[in-house]
Picture 1 (spheres, rainbow, N blue to C red):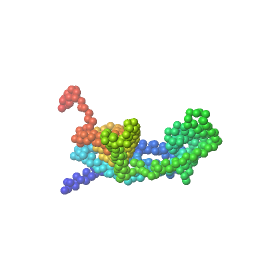
Picture 2 (cartoon, rainbow, N blue to C red):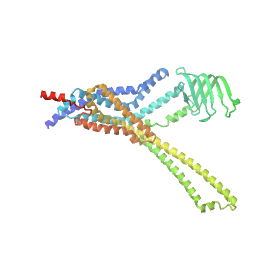
Picture 3 (tube, rainbow, N blue to C red):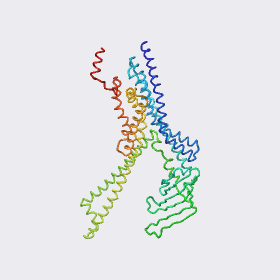
Picture 4 (cartoon, rainbow, N blue to C red):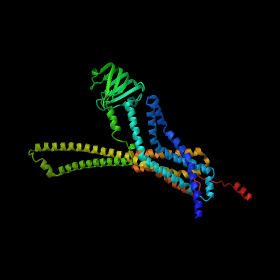
Amino acid sequence: MATRKGTTKPMSLIDKHIIRSTTGPFLFGFSVATFVMLIDVLRHFVELFVTKGVPFHTATEVLILSLGHTFALTIPMAVLVGILMGIGQLAADGEITAMKASGLGLASVLRPLLAASLFVTLSMIAYNHFVFPDSNHRLANLVYDINHKRPMMEIREQMFTEITEHTTIYVKEKDEKAGIIKDVMIIEKDAPGDPTPTVTTATWGTIISHDQSDALMIELHDGEIHELPEDDNLSRYEITQFGQHNLFIKDVKKDMEDNKRTARGDREMDLRALLAASEKQNLRRDKAATKATTLSAKLLNRQWKLLDPENRSGLLKGSKASTSKVKTQKALIKATRQESELVSRSIAHQQRLESSYKTASNRFMVEFHKKFAIPVACLVFVLLGLPMAISTARSGKGVSLSLAIGLFLVYYLFLVGGEKMADRGMMHPALAMWLANIVLTLVAIPALMITLKETPLFHRKQSSSPEISKESTSIS
């Protein structure tokens, strides 16, 4: 019993020492990765506060809420950096060799790392379920409020911006704080794809949002209104010059609310909501597929009946004269052809609906599996990082950091590529999200087994020249 107690205490100290040695590099990797991924968010923060005049506390809230989706990726990368740099430093200082000399194998190093990474994995899964969706939803709401109070934020310089499906605006310059737009062109269409839109140009103008209605007013100065004729008669081309013209655009606020307020996106849902949303889309897909099958069956049944002579004679029973029968047959053939075309279009429409519902379901399931796959990557990086850290211990921290970045880049490419393929229906969502973990695990297990057997992962070939052999013989 005394011997066991004596061996338990040093093992506990070693576990703490290993965790402590990897904690510093983990925090370093987490800070660097978070900063790199937040560069674009920081640029947006400066743009909101300095250029667009958004209050500092509001811009800061946008920045803080934007941290939510970065943590999901930076924590697994930080785990990999912590393993490569922390364990690599222990190996470079000879502490791993000292542990081996004391009878402790690399399994004693792996055990506390797996326990710590398991804790991080479970914490990230809980974070992805309870914190991450609400954080994204609050961020989306805040961005909407900013855009609604400052409608010019949606309009970008030297770009065509579609305010509604009927109105498109182009501005060459804009001043956010003064609320002024310059060199304005507004294209108004009666319907999408209208070949004769009304084009309004102005030297400058201002945009005013009406809080009590769904309208947006654009006050234009020193411009022209070009109304194109519906036919090719250019004599009907009208140009109206104005000093000031107020243009009202309806349903701007309503469109934005429909897109954001009434429903959550896939990244704003927790695990239960994602499963429910995917199941709802699957039910819609099955309903569309059933309807397409029913329409096809009815059409085939009707066509089959027309092939039966008795049914045809019944349809032609009221026509006694031969000419009347011919007319009836032609009318019957024409009606059948029209019905076939109508049913074919209906079937094609149902098939398009089925495909869209399947795509929506895949998107929800991709996000569902991602909430598990990315946290589990922490465990995979421990299995792969340990043998890499031991084998590259003498190369320095720069090499360890480069390996971590390269390996995570490969993982990220797998993740993004799988997500795109799953959204397009080219790959099952589960396989798309777990493929990176599967591939890296298949690489990690053999490398880990070789390292646990005390065989270097990247061993150097020993020189076997005759001169060295003779020299060693003479010394002996």
